Image 1 (cartoon, rainbow, N blue to C red):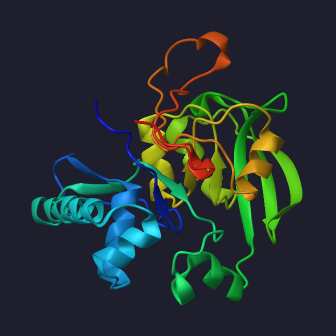
Image 2: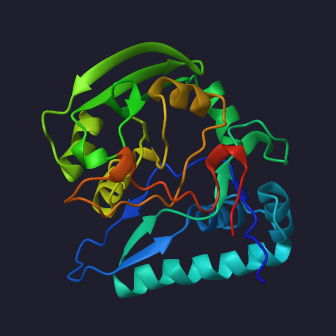
Length: 255
């Protein structure tokens, strides 16, 4: 029986989630997981050793080496063969600056605080106070303005009947940084990545409580959430709630 995959700790979600070659004629895509991205960031960009990377991500050095080789191959495949590169999925949880693993002066959260980047806007597909469970069919989103890790303002915006891809553009127009949602399709996920909007899917329950949980670093979400049910009803009002892998910042990880 295989052992459960251990959650990998990452400093922050990638700011940019997608890269597309200028002269690409095909549609092939390479998926680089967020934890593989973190290994590349630490080893190649931060110039950490594999041992230092393992300590920061709370995994073994052998796992770091395997992930590094996989990530480098995917990056080479994208560059050499002109394939689109998408950063998504994986088994990980976001640090949010609450752990001490030797990040030091390179810590994303420490640097953001020093630069005064303490504001963000969070969007949640919204219906009757709950997280609406089908992103592409939502008629309203609730927008939360965040300052110093606290909710400073709220408003409900009408989406105007926009579809999956157009909703990402709408959120970009609203200057949204983070989307918390239930089920979401692959096309919408790619559109959000292109708009550099961080996605936390597979969330259910109260919209207000979900945002509070996110700010507290304990949001239960599914980084691999996916919904293919674009043409019919969702029994029970839920879509894309197969919560396997890591459950976000709560540190729970499945097989």
